[in-house]
Image (cartoon, rainbow, N blue to C red; front, side, top):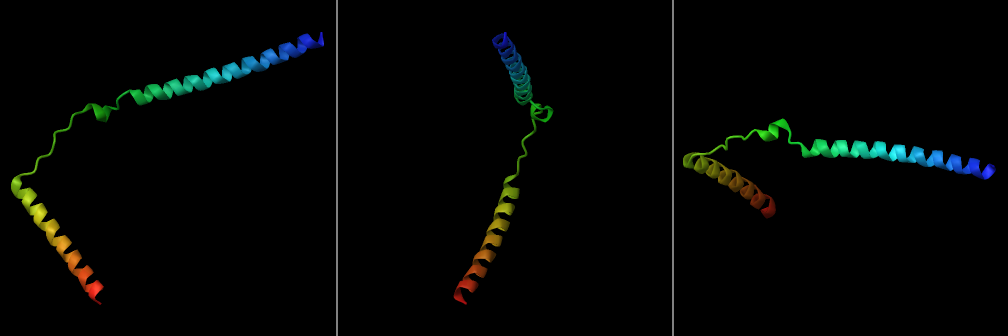
Length: 80
């Protein structure tokens, strides 16, 4: 009789574990579904911004001027 009671306790314990695992599986599936769905912002196709050749040249010239300044300062520090 005590053996039967022990088996029943073990059965209840296993059923609780199964319920807990099913709940976790449900949460994981919900998260996976949420990640699989595209977000509203990702659905919109944004227009690519295009710079004119003059704007690119102006930006390039300014960047070269900044780097020349940095290199000049580095030479001064190295020489000192």
